[in-house]
Image (cartoon, rainbow, N blue to C red; front, side, top):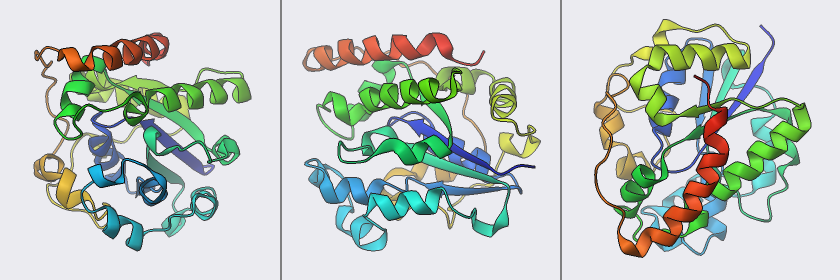
Length: 244
C-alpha cells in the first residue's frame, strides 16, 4: 500500500477523539493526537481557558514548522497509514498551510447548534474562531483547489447513525481498505493520547465503540445567537459535500 497521510480536520466537540480511537484500532495505522495544540496554546489569547496549558506547552513541540516536518516525514512504526487528529482552531494566522498540501485532507463536521451548546459548557461564550469553522472552510477550499476534487467530508451525526457505512465510504475515498477493527475498541487510556486527556477524555476512555446518535434538544442561548448564525452559514457550505 502506498503511504497515506490522513489529516482529519475537525472543530471541537465533534467526536474527533472517537474517530482517533477508531483509526487507532487498525494494525496498519499510526495515529497522532492534536499535534498543533502546543503551538496554539503558546500563541493563543485563549490559553487560560484550557486546563493544563502549561503542561501541554512544556511537553510538546510548540514550533509549528518542526511539527509540520514530522507530520509529513516518516510514519511512526513504519506503518502505511498515518492518521492525524487535527483541531482546525489550532490553525493560527501565522501558520503557512503549504505543508498540508502533502496530506490527504478530510473534514469532520457537526451541526452547529449541537456543537455550540456542548462547547459552551467547557468554554463559556466561545468566539467564532474557537469553533474552528472558518479555518475548516479555508482548509477545505484550499484542498479542493489543489486537487481539483472535493475532499472527503463526514458529518458526526451520520457517523454515529451508521458508523460502518460512513467509515467504509471514508476508507474508499482515501484509498484504503475498510477494517472491521474500526468499529470497536477496548476501554481505557492510550499512550497516543495527549496529556490533556485527563481533562477531556473521560467519556472516550469509558467507550468501546461509537455511541448511538442522540440529538441535543437544548435551545441556543441568546448570547450565542450571532455565533450560531455565523457557524451555520459555514456549516451549510460544507454539509452538502458529506459522504453519504
